[in-house]
Every structure is written in structure tokens, then in C-alpha cells.
Image 1 (cartoon, rainbow, N blue to C red):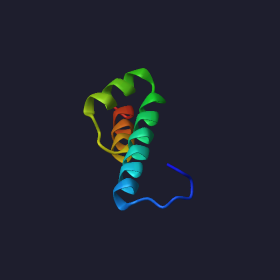
Image 2 (spheres, helix red, strand yellow):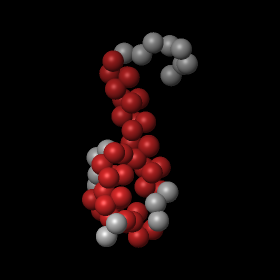
Image 3 (cartoon, rainbow, N blue to C red):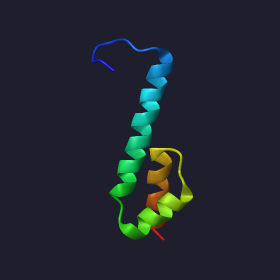
Image 4 (tube, rainbow, N blue to C red):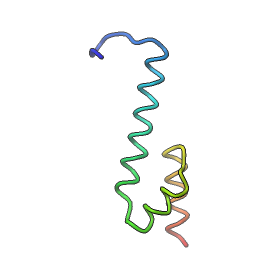
Length: 60
């Protein structure tokens, strides 16, 4: 994809979904190993849910 080129709505949705998935993955990578395993096992669909879940797990 070329910078500055207009994208269809379908392409924009795909790009946004890819960015969201990458953000979630990068967040999980940065967690401590014990929390990382628990968060990944829960298979949270969004970054916000993963953060909430990890925060709750960290308080246990």
C-alpha cells in the first residue's frame, strides 16, 4: 500500500484490525511470564480487555 493513497473501507477495516491485533500481541509479549500465560489462555479479543484481565490477575 502506498502512503497517501486512498483505501477502500474494506482495506481500512483490514488495516485497523491488523493494527489492533499487533497491539494486543505486543502488549502480551511485554507481560511477565506468569501473567502472560494466563492472559494468553483467556484469549482476550481486544487490548482493553487484555489490560483489564492482566490487571485483575496481577492483584490476585
